[in-house]
Length: 442
Image (tube, rainbow, N blue to C red; front, top):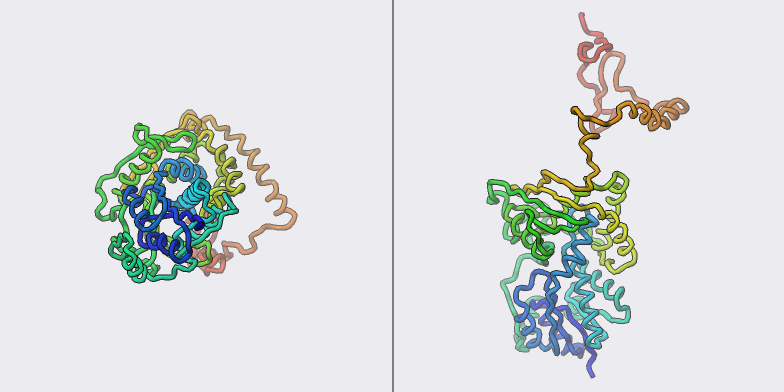
């Protein structure tokens, strides 16, 4: 009896050929699994294509809701942006697909799972590590990496000879992956980091020049760090993200152009479209500014970087990530409120925020009448804060060895080169009282 293998099946050329290749060249019984995270418009047609290609069974699953609620929302609460920019759309989708591969394998009694990653990208790491964490007894195979060495043209010939139901679209100049949380575009002309990305690389976002002339203002509601409503209208997570992608994308919001440090050790020029994610991260960060104390905000920034690194490197199913989740969840207890965001010509600017748990208190912050801040308390505070500095200066001398003011009234220019930047124009006594220009009156 042939061993069973569960293949993550997208319905495209590579995985359709892989169904046949795994059966013919490796002797597997192939079970196809198609997971919709927001980019599969016709699941029944994909299922039929998998069966016609030779799969013994084909699962098609709409996983948009668990994707948003169990993967995107925790990453949003954490503030996880890889290298401070990338909202991790593809990286967040891979562990969910891997989990479903494992679950289908258990249901079908399969001893193998397979995915369509190449041997050069990050996704192979994410799939392989996730499967190892969830079901270490399963073996993982990636046909494009592990033996199915064909060019696109060779795959087409292979498929046509065997009568496979190929969906051959015009070859794209780009490599694209997308889900609800974002769209990634790479390869082709984009590999030249000097060039501006062509407009044909973008699908979700309008060029700034053709974006609406007038701004839109949205009010987003959050409950414990999770977005729940737009403009007072409560929406399920999937609908909220889809609506923000549409509205913000129309204003050209969400384009990201970055040089990315891939986990496999190379740098890659990456283009992303993530309108909803960009807006929600900006709004969530503004809300946290209201409700997190300074110590928590400082430490959570480090947690956000670590969380993003783990997700990017495929380490979702680790105790470390779960431990970070516990801290993040605690920080979100008071992250409830409203944030107003203005969308205009490619920008998403926070223009207002409020929360019942806000630590921003106008009576303490105001410089107007009603100021309740104890100004005299600052004297003792400054004395204590400055005590170590004063003590060090008295015992060891001052830290500054190069004076800025010269005896001749010249001022050392402090520029990019530091104190060695050269001399500025002389400063008259009228400008700085107490400094006499030696040339004055001559």
